[in-house]
Length: 176
Length: 307
Image (cartoon, rainbow over the protein chains, first blue to last red):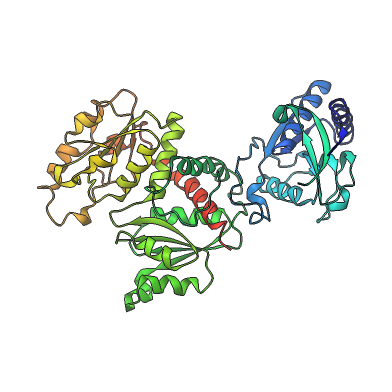
């Protein structure tokens, strides 16, 4: 049983609205960094929206946080380390950190640690498409968020993006 | 692909997929060493022991840096000052160090098979850093990584390995690695230093250097191990240099676009002339750089699963 909570046009609307809000609050000199894999895809879209609307070319990067996880003994023996691409220096930058789902907060913790290893940004703000606020294990909250979903630990929130999943939607389903 | 092995003892028992998985993982680790903070927390809290029963600078340093860049603690075990010199067996030595709760042994020993012996008696991960004349798997992996980086592939290339094949663990590991990944390997050296029947593991043999390098994409020069030449395998070092040393004359007879590799340390003026070592075709320092990334990948894949 799947319950669709966001459609393709709704996802687009959220990204447009939140990109505008981020620019308004942080200014045009921001950089976006996405957490692989779907966060990086969203970050790339956000960069395009901001670039188009403001006639700028902001910095973009993606992070693979596998090496920063605190739970690698729980995730089986074969996580693929796919590498991070951060070709700009985050020192003194305003960073918009992007992920698809904010769940326990541990992924974001790992991503923040990794960014700080590259340099000391002026600000890091968190942008997520879906927030699952009742499952947090660390004191981490989103600054820009698309939708809040109260789902239990037995449920999965699946973000599907056309670049990798061919369809574009967010669904909630039961763990099998 | 799932990596389940606790050890890396050689390339002979790895599949093509295993080898490619390590090389793919190493690509991400190379980026870590290019960062301002050359460190990731992947192996934080793990302890690695460099257990070297034979002298080594490069390999030991490379493993030490690889471990430290993964945030592991690295202990260098000095055999000269250890209880081994008081008569302890290597299995007892390893078990005693393991009792101090270490997670990985990086072993170099002059006897072939020593890392296997240790692997069978400890729960910690064991990485072979060179055993006798048997294997030196991380050297071959970094060579494969470097060749793949330069050519974008390995399959279909011709690799000429020149020198003392008989005593060389580097040659053996490279033969396994390159042939498994689809390259053609030619070994070349004095007949006394080519093991009989080596063709059976899929290489061709050539006793003439000029012939061997003619169509080679990679000329891989082995270090002439002077310490292993007590039994007169060839008349003199100068004769070896004349026939098998790589100098500008031979350089000019090689393929137009070829690359030169050497596992180090180089005997300049013996197996390699200074002029050729400094050419832009030389990948020697790139090999050393890549050694860190490859060893990080190997440590990450094996030690991660040790509880």
